[in-house]
Image 1 (tube, rainbow, N blue to C red):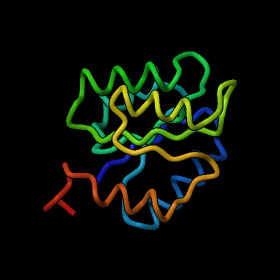
Image 2: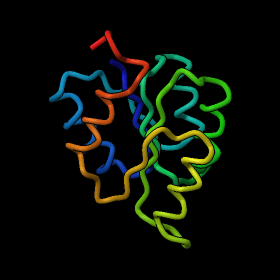
Image 3: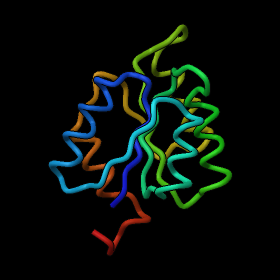
Image 4: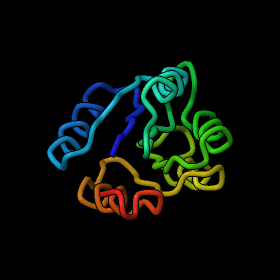
Length: 125
């Protein structure tokens, strides 16, 4: 399964990548939403893990694009906060098409369980 991780913090991308690769997933990365969409067009992902607060193109906008252009992709929104708090941003992301949401610090075990449960992957794992 291909996973695209979109987060402007390299340390977060590294953490997620190391966990997912240990579980046997192929991982691609981008440091903002615009680059994430470009990366997906080059290497289609089954699941996208997208931070919500990023420069250039925010995660909320990115999730909207993925939900419209690539509805077959599972979207997991992650957030550490922002001005209105992580839960408000995450609720907004879910309304726009995020399948699962996780606040930072991330519960990687729960996230991996969510990825394995993505309905688009039944029978492919």
